[in-house]
Image (cartoon, rainbow, N blue to C red; front, side):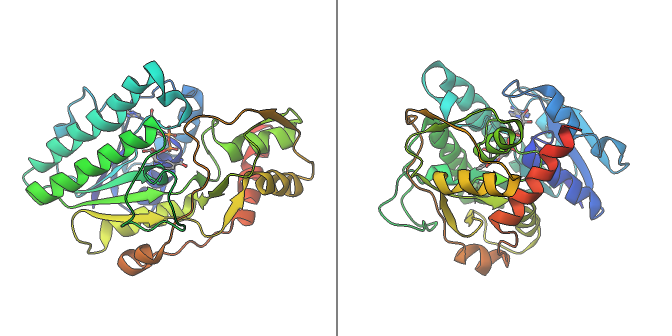
Amino acid sequence: MRVLVTGAAGFVGSHLCEALAGRGDDVVGVDCFTPYYERARKEANLLELRELPNVELIEGDLRTGDVAAWLANVDVVYHQAAQPGVRLSWSDGFATYVEHNVLATQRLLEAARVQPAPPRVVYASSSSVYGNQPRYPTVESDLPAPHSPYGVTKLAAEHLCLLYSANYGLPTVSLRYFTVFGPRQRPDMSIHRLCESALDGHPFPRYGDGTQVREFTFIADIVAGNLAAGTVDVAPGTVVNLAGGGEITLNDLIDLVGELAGRAVPVEQQPAMPGDSQRNGGATDRATEVLGWEPQVSLRDGIVAQLAWHRSLKR
Ligand SMILES: NC(=O)c1ccc[n+]([C@@H]2O[C@H](COP(=O)([O-])OP(=O)(O)OC[C@H]3O[C@@H](n4cnc5c(N)ncnc54)[C@H](O)[C@@H]3O)[C@@H](O)[C@H]2O)c1
């Protein structure tokens, strides 16, 4: 199988490339190294991949690059490239989100549909498309109502996947990830910052009162969901939640990371941030039904693995 992974140097993309290469696929990885966080971290993510003979890494931008050439003879595209993060998506920042999340996805889908044998496109969508819902856990048929400009762009790209399916029969699958964590997690994400605070002793800025509820999904489970979505027989345009099982408040998460790190996390109170939803939590019945997927790694075990990674960076 020949596969294209966009956003290959990122947190999810680099793990996915390793899994795909490990099972023997020919992997083409594309990334343009956006400056959202340091290039050095992304280069570190790629260290093992650069040694593998069945991996080709291309520095290229989906907004401008020769996407058709990257797609030649590709069977499955795993589209991870995006401008992530809620906070910068307001104000002037929005244009960057539209470009990397909407325009880039449209270019990819357009190039995919005109291939002699159009590939399947597995799209990394997000629980942020739900916003604040009247009932939880959310199911895929709930009316999406993003609470941030970032969520709007992730939903727009999901709709693009749906309409390329409906109009051209392009086989797309959208996976709505519920906050992903584990080794290599992006430095802006809460568990990353909590682990660093616990290990270094500097304060963790807690936005809001800490009662917001989140569901976290371990990176290996996200990779497994992608592998299933790329191979099992699913209807074009399918949308599936990938949620780790079990919700937790931010306050309880702060305590859990402190307990597992062996040192309480010092907290610095900050006002709530616009765009942060009060709750996220997703049902995984559809993932089980159509992908045969269930989360395997608990939050506790996953944080232990992530803490080990943070410690390894400090040696
Ligand atoms: N990490 C999470 O908790 C989470 C949750 C929900 C959805 N997602 C989605 O999963 C995907 C991966 O997220 P991540 O946490 O690995 O982010 P990341 O920032 O670590 O990785 C994304 C990568 O895409 C690259 N990229 C961005 N725009 C590009 C473009 N135009 N052309 C080529 N490369 C480009 C970036 O340089 C980056 O390396 C994203 O689509 C994100 O929206 C992530």
